[in-house]
Length: 287
Image (cartoon, rainbow, N blue to C red; front, side, top):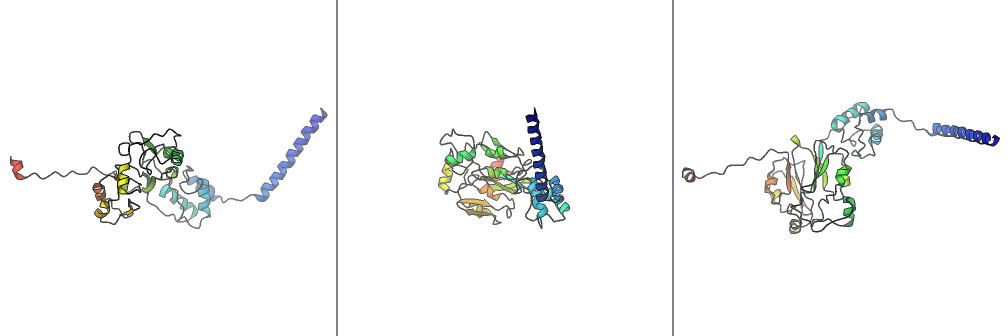
């Protein structure tokens, strides 16, 4: 009995002693945090998506409080309204940015890009891309395993079973960029939402020469330059056998969409085009 009591007393004494030591160390080396960090964090969405370039909302709040200005800091989920609230707390001017949305730059559907082999490995784009170039003749296009879907915290992207391609819900997309990071083929990018959510972009990243690209996918850009010639605003350029549209110059006239022979240029959220009635000769009309 005496041995038991001595053991308990020893452990209690040792515990108290170590607790005192830890308290002294904690007080000596504690770091005082600016109370504004909590205020800024409370204004953030709390998504911890990393779209701002920091590990989470707390890290972004800390960076904002320690910054001399907010020109290089932006929370895509909170948007301009959220950054305006942060600027009020910190007394710093926030830079407003045009709303962005993720777009999928691959139009290689099952019909356009027929399968040449069968993959039976893990259902992960990251794993599949490290093992082979893909199950079609195009080594640049979507692998269709859905890594982008799993990475999205906002349920804004889903795989279309009919096309085998991911589709972005523009109303849910926060432009956080996690799907971009998750895609090993880098077919997803952020672009301006555009007025009335209207956008024009090249839905292809195949950098092979025209004939090779067209053989692998009927919707591939062949760098034929027709879109470049029809654009009056110098918004389209050919680089590495691929057409690219500068959304800062594009006026959304859509002439390039009609001119593209492979339908590699996509128009989104535009009203239906007006079909002009063909003129009927007077003789035919009276016949």
